[in-house]
Image (tube, rainbow, N blue to C red; front, side, top):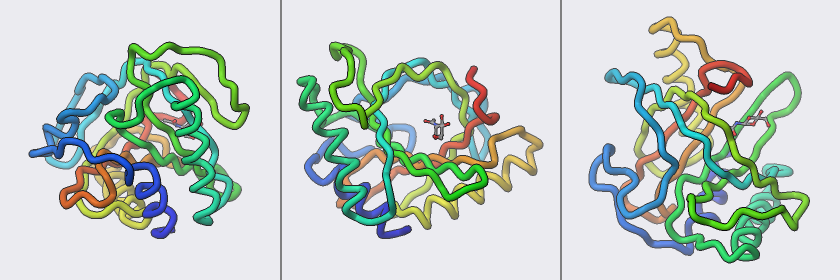
Length: 199
Ligand SMILES: *[C@@H]1O[C@H](CO)[C@@H](O)[C@H](O)[C@H]1NC(C)=O
């Protein structure tokens, strides 16, 4: 698992070297990130309303590095095929969903506004306008890994239970904003407010 996340982040981000966030409030410094509105904030987590935005998504077919490499190559190929830049758009999301069966992993990449949107030429990559959605968000530092992300998802879940918040217990999303080789990392874990409910 840890290996998987390391590969995901390394593969997706290794070719970029963009401005470093100086504080956790500044995590999108010199980057293009999806717009959101903060609805609530406490010492542990915040609640964000993300506005509708375009994302590309592809399945990660297994936990092997070849699967992740293939997933990343599909997204990057898709961006390049559409003439979209790939150097400043963040975050990259790893969505881990467990609904009974084995975990479902997917990789999503933010498509900044201003790109010419057109039909997908690669059936394995979905380009979708994700509608507004509300997430509980907690940041964490450290070199990203699935293990670290799951640990933080569990901390966030406990905090949400304590705060009597309703959330989707089957999904957590890791958001990465830096090169894997960055010295400082602002990572986030996102948990949807309720299962499959948007807005
Ligand atoms: C995460 O994946 C699940 C299962 O595919 C999907 O229903 C959900 O919409 C995804 N969440 C986000 C934020 O992309």
